Image 1 (cartoon, rainbow, N blue to C red):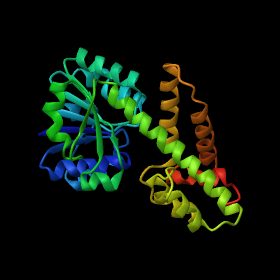
Image 2 (cartoon, rainbow, N blue to C red; image 1 turned 180 degrees about the vertical axis):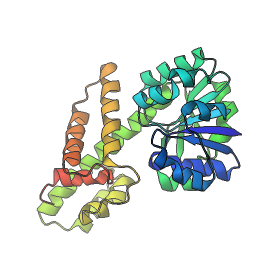
Image 3 (cartoon, rainbow, N blue to C red; image 1 turned 45 degrees about the vertical axis):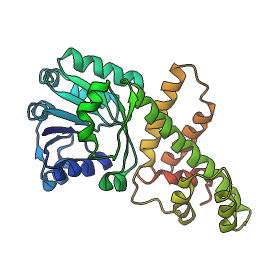
Image 4 (cartoon, rainbow, N blue to C red; image 1 turned 30 degrees about the horizontal axis):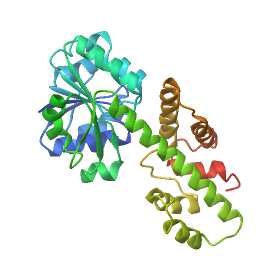
Length: 287
């Protein structure tokens, strides 16, 4: 199948590589052309414009930063003119409302649209073990499930467009809240001079344990946040999207406002491009 790939980012290249390994023809585009060199080296064709990528595809996969980027790249006049007869699969993190608005514009151009945001990072892409959360009609899910199985053993059909975006935001809210809560508890343990191994033993034996605590523990203790699978700046971006979406349906977002404040401090410390576990240095500033 001919697939257009719009976007790059940390997840973009391994996703494109999985498509190429499955013998799909991939044509990639990014607004920053220098970011496309690894895609070309992996065997993808390179487009000089979004319209060119769309012209050379039956299906488009979006891994763009946010709704604004999608509007600029996919829904410019030149791009919209090429969307008729194409299917757009949106895999980034945006709000349910934004996803529905994109769907409406794509459908108005004669194309099809579904969302398939993912949970996991580069190791899960490479192993094909991402959690893929699909917002689509039952017919679209059946049609595209085979393609999505490149990334996941069993893509989950959540419901109509918007439902996949909502559950992705809900999961990313947990990433921020759990990590911030764990960093705060760990900071108290460290400052009080309590044995961290003993603390973790108690946590692991309790109903409070989440595996992410162990995944981030050593990074926090070593103050080493390099080689991120998910940078702090992206978690802040997704936190902002969640807050806007939650407020729009009448939820109290006080907890997430606190997480946003901590992530903002993390960015101010110059830690925007490292792993989001760097928020430990925001709640434990002497380190």
